[in-house]
Image 1 (cartoon, each protein chain N blue to C red):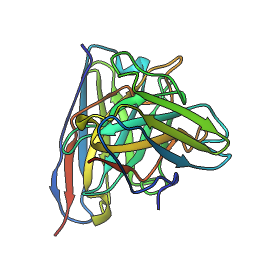
Image 2 (image 1 turned 180 degrees about the vertical axis):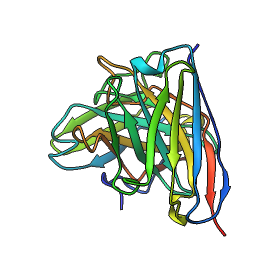
Image 3 (image 1 turned 135 degrees about the vertical axis):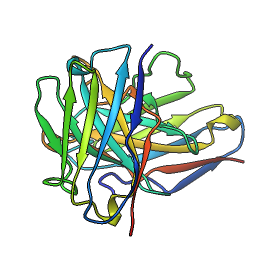
Length: 111
Length: 120
């Protein structure tokens, strides 16, 4: 069982917006502003999409945005495109000895 | 250009040992936080271990006492020594970088991964 809880799957049509939730506890998501999100296409390495809750690395589309409220973080993808179809993982800092914990992953299907 | 290239994966029997390597280029391993993250077939990501720039090391409970993370500064290479391997250690193992002082807690670069299969 993963430390952070994500929905197993979400779907949306091209052009629509979707949101993926990531629920933790006050010891991880709720305790620090160090939530990150990763996109993984089949057979590929994960790619950083969002860090520090809502910051976007250079080169990542502004269609991707992140937020947090209490113990739940969210990733929103607007203007869905076919290439957004992938698995998405949230990750949170959880203290110096635990370091980080991942969510179980969410499969995004673009209909 | 930042690059991470893992090697050393393969088939090993339960109870056996394996050492993974991650050769880095484009940055200095010892100046960053370096982690191993694994992914069992068809499953999600699991953080395994980290070595801080200062040398402190931490491990997931699932591998504590069996795995050892280290680095060779002269070779700019990260290692993961895996002992007493179990079937549940079967996974693709990725090395990943976290860059202080403001990026310690997310992974901005990942290697392509190396597959470890533990089976008799």
